Amino acid sequence: MASGDVVSREVIYPGRACKLKAFVVEPAADGAHAAVIVVQEWWGLNDHIRDVARRFAREGYFAIAPDLYSRQGHKVATEPNLAAELMGGLKKEEGIEDLQTTIEWLRAQKQTESARLGITGFCMGGSYALLLPCETREISAAAPFYGEIPPDEKLKNLGCPILYVYGENDGWIQRKDVDRLAAALKKFDKQGEVVIYPGCSHGFFNDTRPTFRVDAARDAWARLLGFFAEHLGRAVSRAST
Image 1 (cartoon, one colour):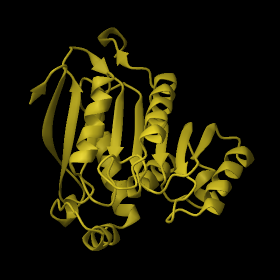
Image 2 (cartoon, helix red, strand yellow):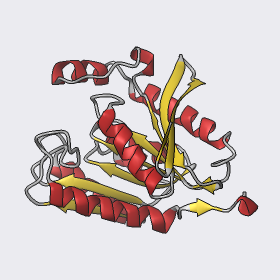
Image 3 (cartoon, one colour):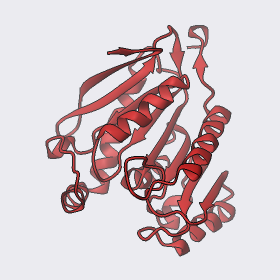
């Protein structure tokens, strides 16, 4: 479906356990583009995550939001009990496996076959956005929003720069773990930044939730775009692919 200067579509590709579904948005203009994987919150692949993918496409990126609940029938939650059940039903290794399959699908597309890949995610997706670049060298930049912090034995394998975004009143991710991440970046000589927003709670970037904070969300988005522009670039000419 075309909308202004971007084109969106649903895609299905084979995963290890089942067929995976994803929402893809790309600039309408011809050419290859840097790619961004957008990983869902515990709610699932809902309209908010699709909107974030569209925002990236309007900035010149090939954006893909894989449905990490594909193994559970592509469910989307609107209330916390079901969201918790769905998130609990997804093993970390299964989520990583499906994200690695998504990378394989991206590499098979002529628009992104040799492009740099970025990843961002929120809540549950933030956890995967930080863990994945510890598991693969395919990611060039990662911007996790208020996700779980992997143990140091994982962080020492971090393979790309990160921008970690956090609200100081987060009731799910503990500040001591965020501080541990900042310390691990220094200890393991990794490039990255931890940004903490005063007065913000978990989920402050999601403009469909009561925790949304417009000023912090705007600032975080601007930082995120600057971070990806630095490490991914935007359009990649076909001559370089």
